[in-house]
Image (cartoon, rainbow, N blue to C red; front, top):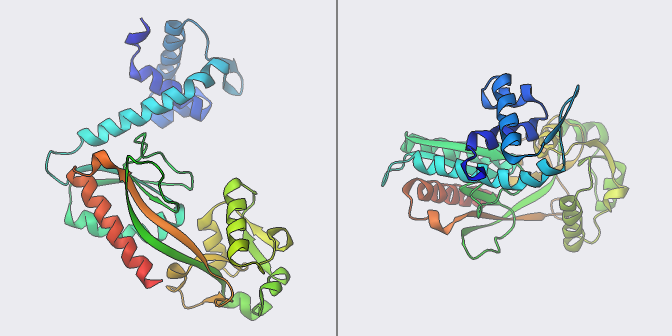
Length: 304
């Protein structure tokens, strides 16, 4: 019966969907390739229809498999949330808490906050998911999120951190080689570090920049001589002297060789929030992490 399908079969199915082959999915789950194959075949037999087309390149998901994907993703999130919740002890700051944040915040800002927290609570385990794709706190894909937009759902508990300013920065070596722009218009004559794709997020950021700074050049007019969709890679390029790029002022101030370009002419704020589901507010470990993130980020924002 379909009601009796084991979660193990769906977990293997989802791993194959994500990885594209039995061998890669097996490595991802720590299983053997024959076991993965048996799981997929057992699920197909129970459902009564195939989910993949077998080819020399691997397994290609068919329409039926793609239709099942969102339900399997939801099931995986629910199981992961259940395991995190069960990992703790009632009344103790112990167990696993999953946090999602952007890569820059996760790499440059959160580590000392989380290190102090784990020093205070040695039984606390942290899962940190770094992505600009917002993981859904409502669906428990993450317990706590650090977001650059305010939440709109009533079921979420949110702490407003405030605005974290972003400015234009270049390394001293770049300035020595190419000079420092004296106006926003001068930016078009310099190498710029930016994104390699015009996503909806990038277009929205461009609209925000021009709304706050009408004289800022259109992105199409900038010499994007160094392009990457990773904010961390952009930061590394700025530090290496590859060009001018966007950087949070609080991060840039740690490096005396990073020069704040046109600081009186350009400033873009990131409105920052810490968010979790309101059902988690009475659980000790989630509350401890939420409070520590809020305090740590408020202290960070104050330095900017």
